Image 1 (cartoon, helix red, strand yellow):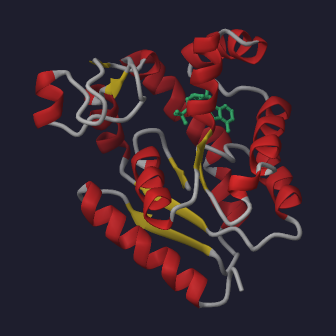
Image 2: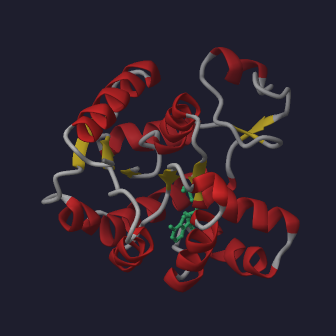
Length: 214
Ligand code: AMP
């Protein structure tokens, strides 16, 4: 799943993974967990994440290679937040060799809307889910687990500006990397979460029905 910060990748990846009973693998979630538990990778990643920059390709590729090797990913997975650079995408092609082809979906949202969404996004301190405004956000309590809802530390205005600049410089070139593939699609992420989820499901089915994955 490709898209800028705030495009809805995490929310949509989670819904798709749940519907297809396959794991959602989010590199942002893996890193945030490493920061919380204080592993060596987490300690190094924290400052980089707080600046809105990208953790090194070698570290990220190692994390994803190890995760995709686990048995629960054998029948499929939804990747959220990876790849973010052309080097990561090239490594992913290597990791996928011998497996069914990647379906690559870009979720496209105008930049003003991304900034608006990120400024008001709240996440649960316990389960990491995004809150669905406005009802849940007003109570500041997670509907899934009852945890407290807070703003992500990298969703403040200045880090958001840096993350969007990093997205434009490092991740947008992935659209050129993937766009000629028959398994690539771009969908609009401007609709409601339900509307985007429906279009995403239809799009994935149409790519799979056209032969990918057989
Ligand atoms: P996310 O939750 O996907 O917005 O990721 C949060 C932060 O984790 C990013 O701003 C990066 O600092 C780091 N991160 C997540 N995924 C990657 C990746 N594939 N490559 C490099 N850094 C990443």
